[in-house]
Length: 184
Image 1 (cartoon, rainbow, N blue to C red):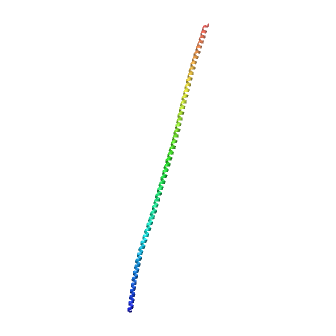
Image 2 (cartoon, one colour; image 1 turned 180 degrees about the vertical axis):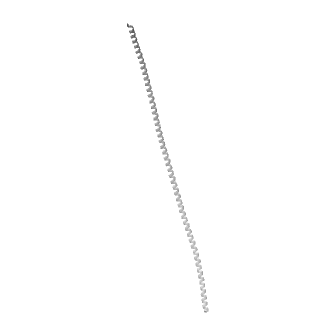
Image 3 (spheres, rainbow, N blue to C red; image 1 turned 90 degrees about the vertical axis):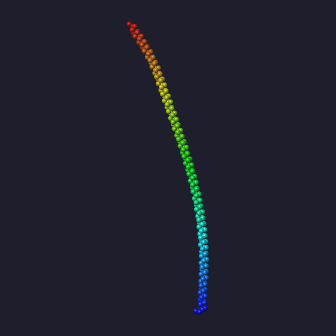
């Protein structure tokens, strides 16, 4: 080989090495620029993910709060309805108890009045029976006394009549016996 060819080959090799260096430099700059753009993309993606997560969490929290408010309102409404129903049931039970007590008192009073009327009627009946018995006894005693008086009067009349009759008999019998004695 000649000197000129060596120079050409060395210059070409130096060109190659310089071009390879420039290629290496450009590739490293590309790599560094691509790595920095990758970092930016990753950061942007991370920011987007964080924003999405925050939005989802906020929306979920709002939904949970709304649901909790709805549940609390429903529970309050149910409690109010239950309290109203309980109060109505208590009022109805109290009214029914009062009505039953009043009806029972009316029935008891009517029963007591009926018993009092029955007792009064029995007392009146007993008094009437006693008065009737007393009247009957008085009438019987009066009749007995009247009969005894009449019998006594009859007896005295009979006794007198008998005595008069005996006297008459005695007289007449005495006269007849005297007459019989005086006649011969």
